Length: 427
Length: 126
Image 1 (tube, rainbow over the protein chains, first blue to last red):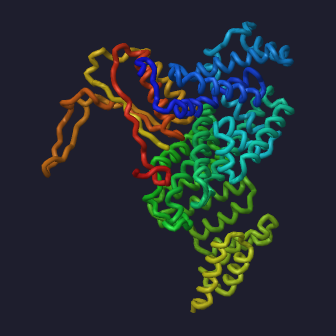
Image 2: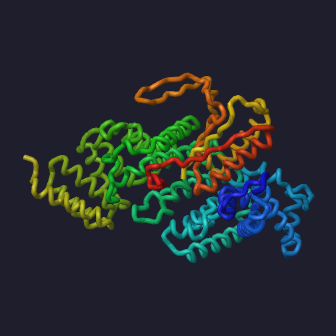
Image 3: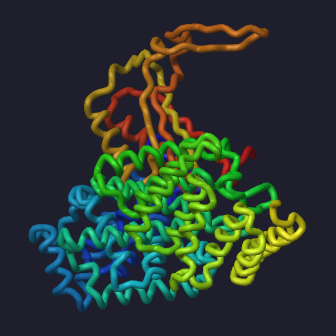
């Protein structure tokens, strides 16, 4: 045992840990230097291979991040020397390093880390990429996940993911994505895209069922982590704090939302003592930060504000439905979404009684966006039942049962129809 | 995986008080933790003179105000860390002690790392 270097029992596991902690900013800094995502990732991987070869002997260096960066940049310079891209490469390095192309600027690399990581996020969420390419590339390059892990998370094969990554990198290279520096107006749009990708990742994980691979719920953790990283990088973006708030509040209910048999438990039936207090508090704090930064709430912030109404209620009965209905109205105005209106109908019924909810729900029936949307029929059935209009309720439940893709839900709907028939209309 | 890390040392500080360089390095370390999303929260603890111990022994509950009789291995600060593997939090602990080694001559102590169990199937008693 050497006294001055920490030698872990399993060096490769320790090196992998360093990699997980450092790969994002390593790749991000290399993108700035070489202006190519694929090449930056290759260089970072080469540095990892060098670490795997050397560290088990030498021990983990005092500053592993700087070691990986130095190794990768040396290799970058070697490649530039020998490759046909020599002229362009030298020009870029010379410009970034004030002409001292051969000096490896570790201090500079670490000073730029905020800009680098944000740039990498912008590139991964570049408008030239499809949403699934954006999520995949974000997980690979910003999340540091392996192709195998991403494949498990998306319930697909490694080959599919590998191919998606290759194609995405080619698209980015063709679009010159690593070269452009978005102006302030573009930045706002790109930031919105990054937020969208993070929430997509979160939902991908949140929608996992109990039988799914554990990598799917791990997507929630990764999305939360990316949210934390991004709020550190862009602390003044209110909607970003709103997104973090929304994810924290939703994830606080993760454990409570399935019963012992893996069956889903609806929000109002959940055991609220099982809501995670840390996530809940962080969610409410993030919402307060969003509101302090901007008087106008964006879509994620509004959704977070609705989630916060549930989070603040000790019991389901204590829920402030009047406020929730108001928030849904604001959200509907911002999104123009018919689905949000269905939720508002439910909130109105909880706040002011089933007749108030039904008035809105009836107005939604003819909307083309909701044709075939089984939840509208479920909601109308529920409200009609509460109003004692059982025959109409029966028709709505049957309609919903015919439209839903979910077997468990169909069974529940048909059970409600059965109960209606035996109970008969209220006298 | 969520962990709590606790830094423990001799609170009488025979090697002298922390130099300003330590605070700077610790601030940079915390910023790094925010940037890679691993740091959930952290805090420093006051001296044991400001604390107390409530204990139960032989069927009776006793309150003893600080300072504590045993000062060698006292928690001075904590952090809550979210990582994907135990090795990652060990690496962060190693960096924390490296910062002490580089910036606080003579300091000795340890970083205790404990997993926080979460009610989401992430971890359970094992």
